[in-house]
Length: 144
Image 1 (cartoon, helix red, strand yellow):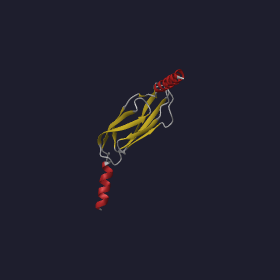
Image 2 (tube, one colour):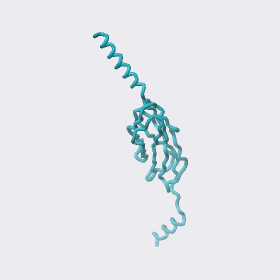
Image 3 (spheres, one colour):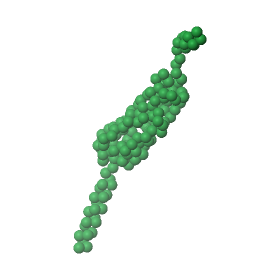
Image 4 (spheres, helix red, strand yellow):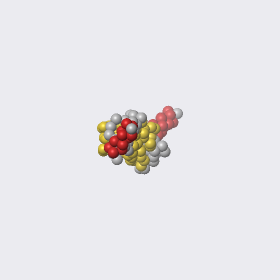
């Protein structure tokens, strides 16, 4: 009876240890994307963060949360098998925001061994280009 109990305990420990070694791992090609300089005339910019599951178990992204409402991440919702790739598409919309430099964070939560990863986007949105001739004509029309 003692031997049987010991055998069952050893078997359970072996299974638990084997399962513990089966983990997903998320590896990004880059974790920061620089949009460079763009105009407030076209304030919506998008980039894609590509990643690979370098672990040996399916990877599940639970959520990707941006630090600001002006930034929207869209990510692969299906489990990513070991060795396969996925992407997180991030759109920044500077409409209604003050021109200038910005840096935003996207926090990715998953079942990977590195369960929290932070991605960053940055850029410099310049002030809206003004059509000087059109502005002069509109001002003249207002005064007539």
